[in-house]
Image (cartoon, rainbow, N blue to C red; front, side, top):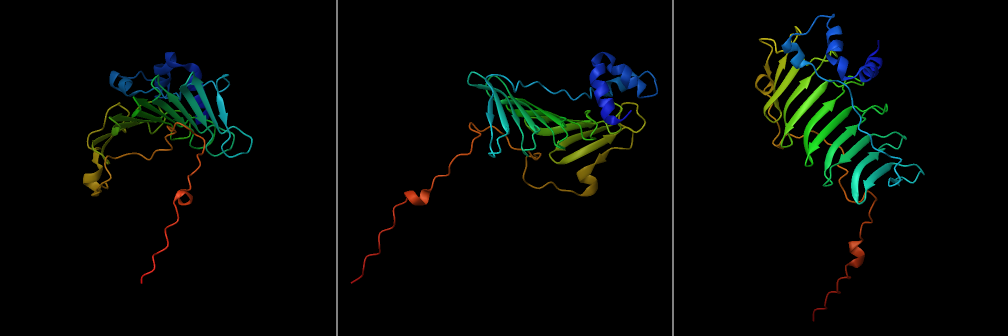
Length: 245
């Protein structure tokens, strides 16, 4: 079974068979409590955004006659937005808003295949977690956790068995302490811990706090281009210099 097909099968089976499927990926052997604690839900769950709602506003920003941005509102409040950033007819970014108008969730399709590759969640507009599908298998394999917008720890399933086998801790921004599990017992193996900055001599640049590259925030009140004022035209011409006698 291919990775993409496995990802689709996972979404059909649902959480009821979650641990059974994890067991089957380990040769049918029952998982220990420690192993079960390392198991993660790898389904990429897209949140619905009703782009066909009567209140939806559709914008064509490049003038090709096709919708590039769709805004769904309830009254004056944004509920969600969908963006086709590269004008290929497929949505690249979904954005969702809470009752106060702050961003609460974003979904990204980075590889333009029509499947969500990353889900970011927010609290009061501040990033709290990123869930990523980095192996092009339409299933999650990386989970990043943030405290007050700063990355503090991460987990990764590197072999697509639905069990975390690598952990990153960030005692200081940009300097992870990495632990790995090669024997699949659900916990870091002795002697495998790497203090990245200590062992490599890497010193993070002083542009702290450490922040991951972000796409456009899409938080502007108006998504339509605005005309740039011609300040030069408004400035009166300077008076001619007075002649000296």
